[in-house]
Image (cartoon, rainbow, N blue to C red; front, side):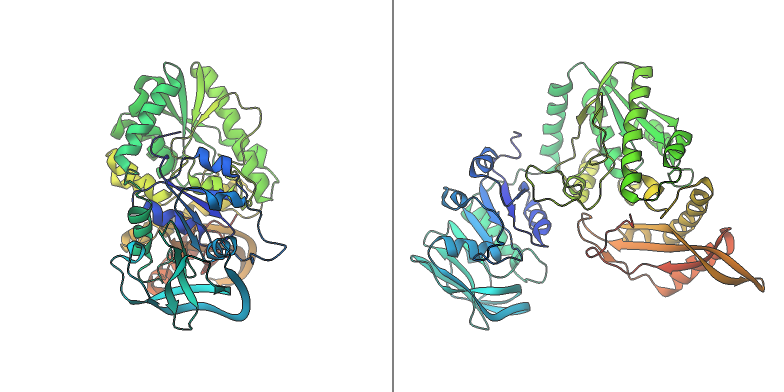
Length: 516
């Protein structure tokens, strides 16, 4: 195990909508965090060598038959534990306290009053606003435990044991609505658990370069590049570590944005000095996708063909034993690939859930423990130009997941033109950098319109723009109406085959960022 991961924080996921946010908040303090399923055994957990454990919230009741499976031995190990919401109930229930459903839950904002001043409340105000989301509550405090805070409804909001190695909050310190939640988490990390701030871009790069040199040695690695920030950073990181033994390949599957393949390869080759080549495989991909409508099938077909194309190109180019990819932590989580069984498949990412079983490569994924914003910090540290780092995310399957329904050359061309107009206007209006991700989607619906006093029956384009930090959650971007009008008018007037434009105002959750 990497020294950066040892002495980090393990988060046990009991199904909270905020679990990913807990991980983010820990990492913002330069401490490594990792999410594990609730049914992780104590033996497996200890192999991680954590400095602290956090028990997430969740929708179940601790006394319910449907409560998540959990190794109770974890609660007795000599490692500081913070319980949040459901995690509080677990700790109290285990240590002899009482948790009950009184029918008087708390949802939304609440005010708390601190009752004691110690390490967990250091630098916190005596009164502050917090975010609650619970029905069950503590009605009896375990022996030798003390109340840390009460809510304005006289409900126990936080408590801990005598030495504060077990701390629990009824509220959610990880959400921005809790005014001093960040301070409480820092107190737990550094005052109680004595964590070290070693999860930094500099340390990560140093560790990964050493790992790559040790793992690959004198063998060769072929790296898949898509044009997005993830694959750009991973390709350049491997290039710096291995230099001449690294060959980067951008496969044009015919589903990239307009002229993107050529622009990307030119910037990486001429700007960063990378050994990279462009291969046009569009006809092969499009033939495999012909008639396919189901989004999961599309992703798996694209993922499989990527590997087969890499396999062929690698054999033609030299003896490559390794395949480098820009897989991120959210990709793994959403694909349901985890050390346990609690992760649900939201969608197969082409470089995770869409990989074939008969690969001839050993996968190298240096960024698989990172969120998107962390990747950008790594890119900064590597001195990759900002125009490459701050490009909006682009999925590996490309426009294949932005063309709803059948993929054809005609539909690809329509979407490429509409998307280019959308992005160009955002840049012109200085809105591009305010948005985490923006793109157009081609909908398999035709609508009636009037153009030039004539009836039309043409395609529908949906525009999508969101704000986010890491892609795990996102909010739709409040686009100025005059800009939306400008974009819509230009698309309808210049893109042949489109007569209507709509704007997607769905957040994640309940939606995903991409449509498929």
